[in-house]
Length: 220
Length: 418
Image (cartoon, rainbow over all chains, first blue to last red; front, side):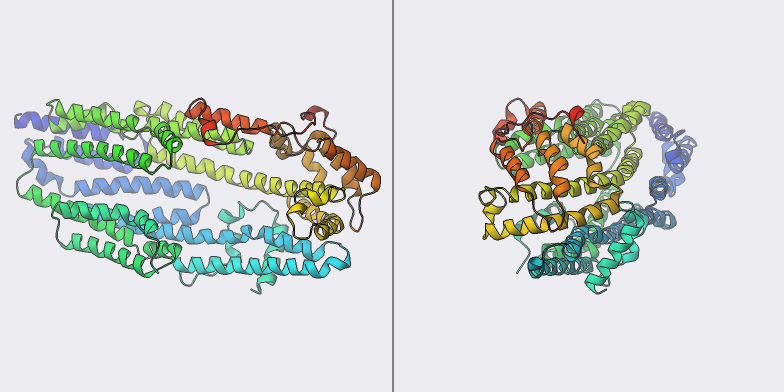
């Protein structure tokens, strides 16, 4: 195939790459970047010129796609009020322009995504609080139910077992969480943050009462 | 003691294969060395640690899998650059490399499908893998691309046509994704845990179809769909949590009423749960004495959480769905007896009076306590399973769905007194 034909074919190829993003607001950066690549190719009088005109446009193209994806994710997580999940794409957007090679693009995004994934996993250990509700309710029943006196001692034993199980539950979770972050401690304040609070289907007053009950039973 | 070898193999198998692949290609250099360092460290930790959960956390927090993958990519990239600099690459070489990669992808898809079948524990599981594996839907678009590449066109024309004909999008496997979403919805309907579970799956499928209808080649943008799906799941999470919380607690309260009633009957020592206890007589006495007081506390908690009292539940969607779903344990007549006569009598420090005990005993002796249609839920699940995996397949896997021996009438919510 003659070089002229090949130049035409490569120009048509880069045009097709650009056109697939045309009018798509999700891929604004990618469209601009593909357009730059297409214009570089279209301006060549012969194929050999492209190597010089390419410069770092390929890397810029990879970065553009990363930015489009990160921007979309950041927007979605902010709309869901998931600040922790939004942190990853936000950091990618801050740092990705520094990439100079394709491997740097991969390294920067991978490192940030891994760090963010770890943060999300660690945040999930807070679920121990709602999981503990069933223990708290059993304990409340044993503490407050009106029953004949002859059963009180036996039921105090059951209550004590549930209290012990509740403490062991938190101890186990803290031990597992410290495999991920050595200084992790369960924090009651985290339960009140929107991403956790919305999955605990009780009113604020009931939640507050359970927090106080947990603090008293755990001793912290 | 080291981490269980089977779990270690599952964790590290892919990385070991990737390392062998590069060794086979005679890879070397700084990136390859870093890759092997990461793998060796994962292996060492697997020998020295015993707790798998701590081991998995360690691999993640030390970023060993990521370090391996990055170094692998760099090592491969370095090998490709060396090949290009040696002058051995041109368009036909690039075409060959591309088509070889696609042939390798087909081989890997078929290998994975075979591995899944080989790992299946019996013929039934292998049949399930066969039915669910949509491998050929994934393989066909790749084969179409390979044919295009082998047709003699130039490399840039191949790349352009891949985009213009949507062949790159076809490789994303949209039909397989849609099939999986429809499969999830089918099971959500068959299980019918709650209207929210079903609505969530329906919304996700509808969103996929909506995006497909607007997309080139009817293939939704994966990122757009991924985020839309997450938003739908996010929206339904609180409703599902509330449903589960209500259902679990009223179920417990009704069970307490049921057990308290049976504890008074003459056959209590011989029936579940007391026939499982070391000292049935003591357990029965404790239940008779304590359940009323316990139930009052449970009710107080229930009202505090949901602003519902116990009887309100029986007009609530949670109860009505459970009945319509053939998942409600008790018969209508027994439930009306529990709510109308037992519940008012269930007061702290009190026992049931003899006339009510006698009435409860008659219910039990005449087998009128339980829902006679509980089997219909199992039948619905069986029907759905067979619709997916083939007529008669459910029966190969599970014991038969059997009717219980209840002589009670089927539920008629229209005539329910509460």
